[in-house]
Image (cartoon, rainbow, N blue to C red; front, side, top):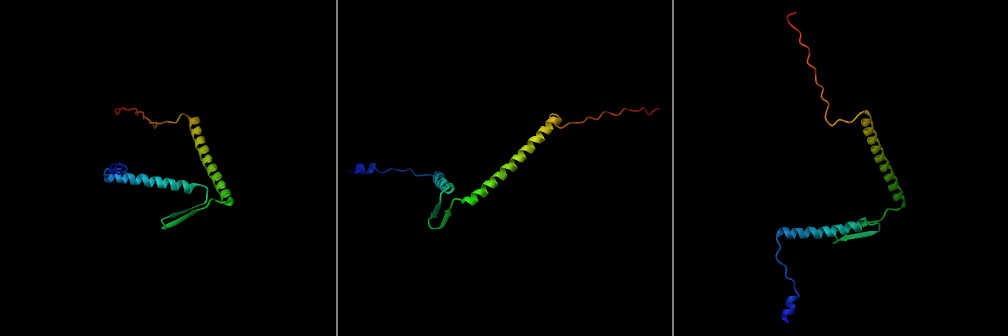
Length: 118
């Protein structure tokens, strides 16, 4: 019967410090991503972390949603205007001629030499 009891336990090898750190980071990341999903949900939630601090999140009300939609529209309009302006500048360059990737070098022609005898 002692053989059965010994088989039910799992033996874990000793870990190095980098393996322990990696395990801690993976666990912390999993917990953090779970909290992020909960926090970004549009439901009312209240978090209590070991009685150290408490957070409460409420979804935005209708007035706040209207304000957010207006802000979103304004930002989209500003972005579109910038893109249109950039496209117009590119089209202007193309109409003037192909934009040069290499700077234009002007070669000076040598001045004609005058005879000093005359």
